[in-house]
Image 1 (cartoon, rainbow, N blue to C red):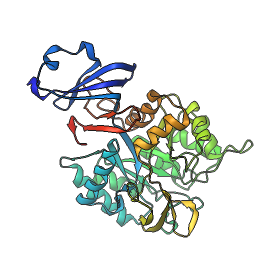
Image 2: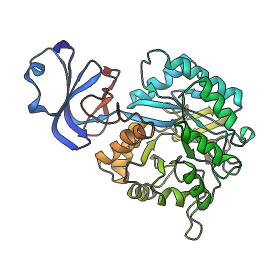
Image 3: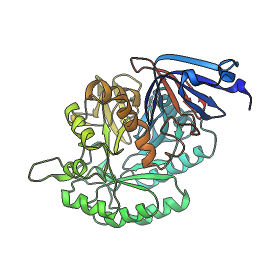
Image 4: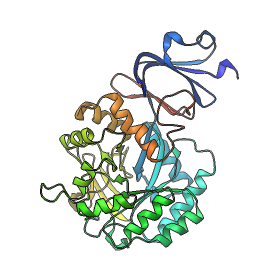
Length: 391
């Protein structure tokens, strides 16, 4: 291997062992080949013609977004190569290096089409954020808590559909959001668990006891915690109470200051300190663009001051315009998490949920070089995906 293809990054390196204040990362052939103190870099690299990037800020692992519907004017429900390139390029520019395109509650034929398009996309080199699979948000949700999902398309959990999708595209569906109190949900959760698919609760009217029964069946994740679920009450803990209190449940959070108050995010973060807090965007097509009218799935949306709501229903949030780097900064600057804690929520914890933590999610020697270079204000200066500097 030629020393000339080594890339050197200098800054405060966020590693599983802590922050290296005067650190460096070396990238070669798509992998991290060094992560340590800059003074200990091999001289053959520092003296070579390697590309070098320096920051007074941080080097962190690339972000992994397991719940995102679109961006830059496009929606994953309209997936084709151009749409997938557009969305993955936009979110990659905002620090996302791995992504789960997320569908809406829709007719089965529409979901079938998205799965076909995403499967075809993943069979070729992906130039931006790596598509790790698909997250199906619905259609197995509660009609009492549809949120911005079209209630006309809600159906009961259907294991036959899940089997059909898994047979057609093995390993493509990585997460399914469903309401665990619905008829057939426990069987579906057990089936998904057996087949390595993350069963997640969301858009649900479940009681605390119904959630606990689902956890016993294999459910391990809560979708956009506090939103579209039965709330916490001191005599009826509800879905939110189960997510908060059960350490087996990994909790997604939209950290934009719109969906959840920072005090509630802080409570959640204090309770989810066993690598079980996940930062998500839940971004829709308006992310990266200005106010105006958009679509989420087949429902019209209005965006005012960056807040997306169903058209004519200003109290019904419809996804977000968040990006992972903005959510990452919010966790640190507004919620009070350390950069190490925020990095776990944005990178390692979702990698663990997707069972890809052996190759990405942390800055360690031997892992693929999904890396971000940030300045001291936590703005992005560079994005590397599998060792390629993409932005």
